[in-house]
Length: 310
Image 1 (tube, rainbow, N blue to C red):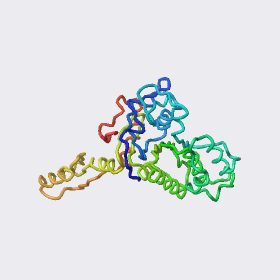
Image 2: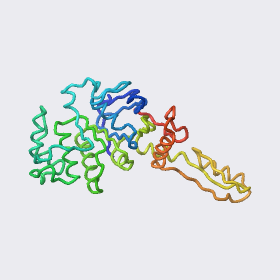
Image 3: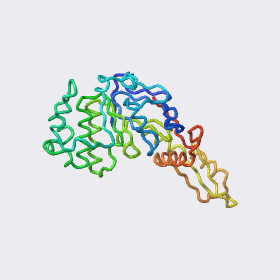
Image 4: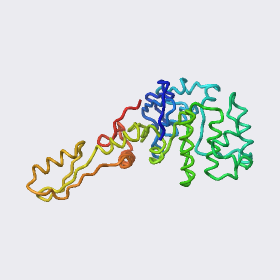
């Protein structure tokens, strides 16, 4: 996870009450986000949560149904060529350019920008110097993803969108890609918006995580903040004197256990304190939403993590 040094307090991305509907289907239901300069921000959610739709709106490729959005100080629906040149995109997959050689492709893309990175230096940055003369369709999956990043940052973008970037990666390729993203944020000062359904990936890379479930932000904060909030909602289980199983959720399990011992005449049967992990909480949010497709307010009253978006 990176540590962001923020010299500009204005958010790179600011979203308020963002909505998106396809006919009668509400995909986004009032999303609020602030993403700051130099930050790696993960938008975490299951498939179908609205992650890609959110990113497409912010990239200016999809018109929103309602709400406000500002990306690099501009409404993405009105962003022109100069605005787009400040943004880098790494989509889920590319299917073209397969016959180009790697170095030739980067050199060609460099002609589209007023101040591009040097293609040879970029090859070294993404670890593809030895593959410069190879055709794109002969690269491994991890190498191709590194090339995707190279194409996304050749114009020196201030903001980089990574949409499910490691889908299908083996563990080694995933590790190398994560190291590259961390380097871009730490050394280059690039702001990164990462969408993923992989909690471990979000915890590894992100300064902050927003959990998007059924088109709503259910929680937002640093990985440590979210983990603390998840663990704080402990469940104490025990068996009463009459043999009845009991359980109680509490923010202060130590006090509850002390009170149980104070009131008991002897040992408390089957006493157990369970602190859910961040993964437990995230999975509960996903499953609760899946079991309640017509939920009106989008909030899991018992398990949602309250955290400021900004």
